[in-house]
Image (cartoon, rainbow, N blue to C red; front, side, top):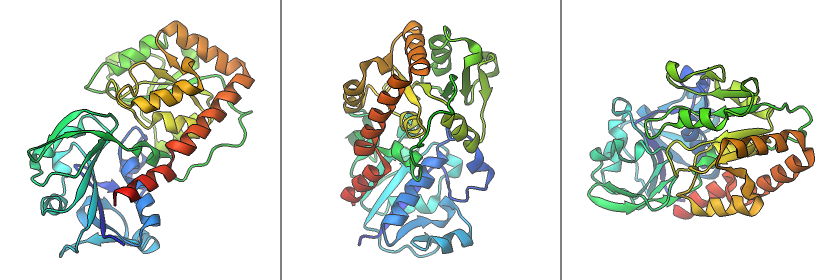
Length: 333
């Protein structure tokens, strides 16, 4: 079995889920890296992580003894999966040194801000760059790449099971979205949900105070948001940047929530668009009136809700699930 290294350049992997960094809303990217490491650690005999790139207690390491922390001397690394980050102050120098030592590695990027933020420090180019968008141009270590797609978003639902019952669900629209610097995501969400009564809309996430209204309640712990989604039937999802896919669609579907999808969402992952169209083209909503129409159909017509959510579950289980992600990672190794 190959010696595999996993890391995140520009952010620590928060394995200790009791820490404040972990309790933050799952709009924060630390949950993705934690779950990707878990997927690898239960699949492989050994996964190496640099000790200053992870927040993990000794007790946790003893419970998951396939995770080995690199402290001083570096073992032979056959393959590495490195998530790109943005924070120069949280960049592990040891991890960067291993990346630049000439190892075979793959760059993983789920946030457009990460695609170029720290790559100036990398001198050893990866084999490929996988992102939430296909065929974007990027340069790492003097080599040009076209981004490829890997269903990294599946990591965010690792360990979850589909709820069996749905009779407890309410008729509110629960939206999860942070403001971004890549487009006016919050303004878009405010406009698209304007025809739905404001007391039926809750938006979780970070945004500027001047952009908030009664729909926006801020950032909440991950468990709070998880339970809020479990009680909902419908959401609206808009990308972190136009064209990108995010984890919001699969989180929603796993929790029994039908995603109504912005026409800016996942346009750079064309196969996903085709897959959703095959289920119901009306899930793509281009106007506030269409969003209202679909919202009312979902909350008032249980047969329609049940048919669509079952079809969406079958789709993600067969093509986008954590099991599929695991198999895709193993193929790369």
